[in-house]
Length: 253
Image 1 (cartoon, rainbow, N blue to C red):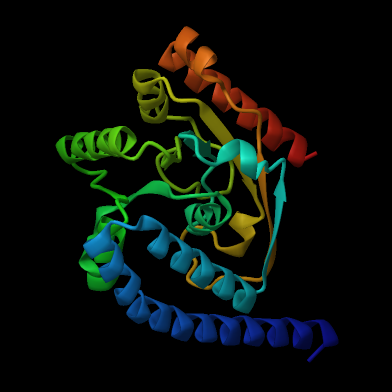
Image 2 (cartoon, rainbow, N blue to C red):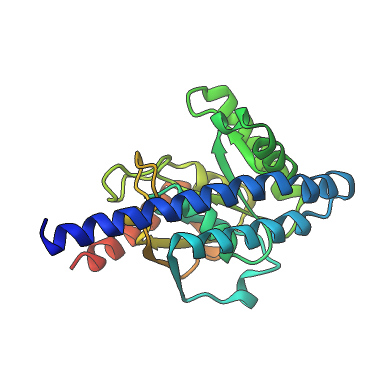
């Protein structure tokens, strides 16, 4: 066996070990999450569950060898303000790590299939995350209405949406759907674009293992309320798509 092959096998072995340890820790964190979930259910103190989830994510990232770089992040500018946050979607990890980074509570849509997982689905619902059935247009509309209610009731919570609708199979940007921009337009909310890099290598769609990787989250210039007000949802969508496409092209040079 060559030295290169030996190193490859060795690295794969450690990837498996990291993932096994992370899986055990994840089960532990899920079980313990019952406590902060109950606290939030009884008191409405969302920050308890948010802080617990962000701590658990940080531990799991360390175990899995995920190193994070955040570019153009201004905590004071972003916190205590509602945003519609949009990003390219290449990995299951995208919303999880953005949730950890972003100040306050960031709500995401998630696939309705997760509702079959007892503790996790309960925690997500208590935390006001939004279950969406992509195969059922009527239920998808109900999910959007729930997002609207969150915007109205929780004055400082932001909504995270991936305009591509699903993860990219090849890591390349796909056409944007209009939903995120319609939501921003209807409620005159600023749009914050976020570009993810390295996430596809760490865990592309279809792969079960998470590989050690350097992850980058780059916060792009936001579209202000005035820009949202003056542009149509189609114009907003096209502007955002072209922005992401330009960055993707530059990254691949």
